[in-house]
Length: 435
Image (cartoon, rainbow, N blue to C red; front, side, top):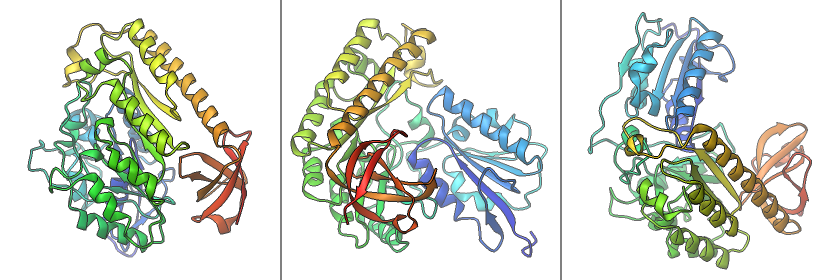
């Protein structure tokens, strides 16, 4: 490669916060003296597409992204990596223009695969089978967002009947607390004030090292420079009283909990092979709200699971309607090859799945609007983003309300105390600065 003229490389991420952390880490494997990082919307010499495969829709979005970049820059070297590449490498390699397909572990060795960067007649595939001895690939994001995503755990041992994640990422694994505290210190040295703790099943942290997720939190809050920790998602049966009480007593742990529910019907939870009943979820929400009344609480819900009757759905809707939740992430059930749910009877037709999904999305919007009203008039601390949007600067409160304020470059990346004034025309919260 001619070092006098750097190659332009672009990165595109699909899927979860964990993928964003991993893409940022992969991008740092490209030497600056050889590569110039450019936005994915620009023409580049190399595109690295980090994929998701949680649903059929995710697979489709991956294929669309791949073809979009091939069309944008036909002579570019196209590398497709991640979960979709792990599960369906042959499907990806069949797309004309793809040069390299790397699985979930191999993507962290991408520098060794990308050498000449010449277009290939046939895509090279390196998507190896997973094993119990798979390594943990450390990852954290830097430079591309106001906050940093820190990967604390990977893989999952749960075996939910609908989920491909264990097939794509293997068994649960994690580094030790000392290592993660070191990474948090590195993030702090870059001026980042908030870390989002990410993983596949972060509440399962510690299986590899004999530690616990609460142990990790207790040590992370001691790292100088980091002022806020946000827990990305945690299973209801792993959200302990101790962790909730820690969030109540320590300002650094943000009052925001995202708790997967998946169904409000115990019969469907059983078919899903979830490890709790709905009353466990309700109990967690009750304890959070008792200690932290203005805590933000989100939930994942799957609609149209095989065997879900109209009565089951109404049970889920009623259960959620009565809970003081802030928002929902609603997923229309998608059959995934290789999962138990693939062969379950009682398939719900697609039209009915979409109808149920729309009903829960409308309920989510109603709950979120109510939560914004509940917060109006209160003071909060906001971490402002570094991006200007329509003449405004935006940011998030600790309890995950998005706010906006007239653009002021001095606020970017800063945590400021504000008063929440109510809903703006754009759907965000209007604020006034207090200090």
